[in-house]
Structures are given as C-alpha cells and as structure tokens.
Length: 189
Image (cartoon, rainbow, N blue to C red):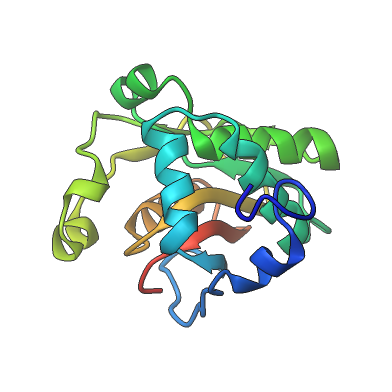
C-alpha cells in the first residue's frame, strides 16, 4: 500500500495523485489505445519491483487499477503480449499474461494465447527511443485470429512498437478484427 491508510491496495487519496496518461498518439494496426497512467514515480517503482524483483503482490495492485479504470463490454477476447522464451524462464512469469488471465476469469472473456515471439529479444528498457522504435520484436501469430473485437493487454508502453508489431501480426492473419490496446503505464504517449 502507498500511504498505509485507507483501503487496500490503493486509497482514494493516493489514487487521485497518480498522473493520468494523455493518450494523443495512435499506433499502427491498433484501432483504439487506452493508456491509464504515466510510467513515473511510485507506479514505475512498483512495476519495476514486480518485473525485476519478482514481488508478485504488486499484481493485485495493478489488477485493481485495471478493474477500476477499464470497461470490458462488447469484447470477444483478450490477447496478451508474450515474453520471449528466455525472458519467461528468467522472470518466471509474464505481467501481461497474468493480468489478462485474471480479467478472463473475472469477466468471463476468453483468453487467447495466439501470439509468440519467434526469437529472443533484447530487453527494451535497455534501448534508446530510436532503437526501440526500429526494433523487430519478432511477434507472430500461432493461428489465424477469428473476426471480432479484442483487447490486447500490455503493462508498459514507451514507443508503441511492441503493440504495433502485435497488431500487425493479428491484422495480417485477419483484417476484420478490431483491436483495442489497454496499457497500464505509458511514457511519452
């Protein structure tokens, strides 16, 4: 908890102090983009603790934000951004998958495991913005996506290249798909 007062895991006072992301950019192959908060301050710290220190309790914290901020009406499925095989082994989990799985269970929305990273990739947090924007994430579809409305869930967005690559792979498998990307934390979007 942030202030150790009020409701767990986020009291209303602390919640209102998070800086909202002003999503002004569009991303190729993504029909709608919703970035909830800026990737800074305590939220950046908590995401780092979750991803790099494996403090899994922060999943509850971030899931609470998603439930509070997002609507899941008229959605045919959830697609998560995969980790490459080596990163999955090192980290032991994928934030996007874990949050997507919870949404699927709580809201009764099918979870689709249709994306894969075809090669190990360098961690994007170690690259400059230019390198991130031109980097090939090697995202492929395992099987064609059915026509429908889908949410692609990701934890952090910087340049939008990962989401664009995922959207491209999905739309190339079926161009009659509506993709809404929901991202917890964004930087420079």
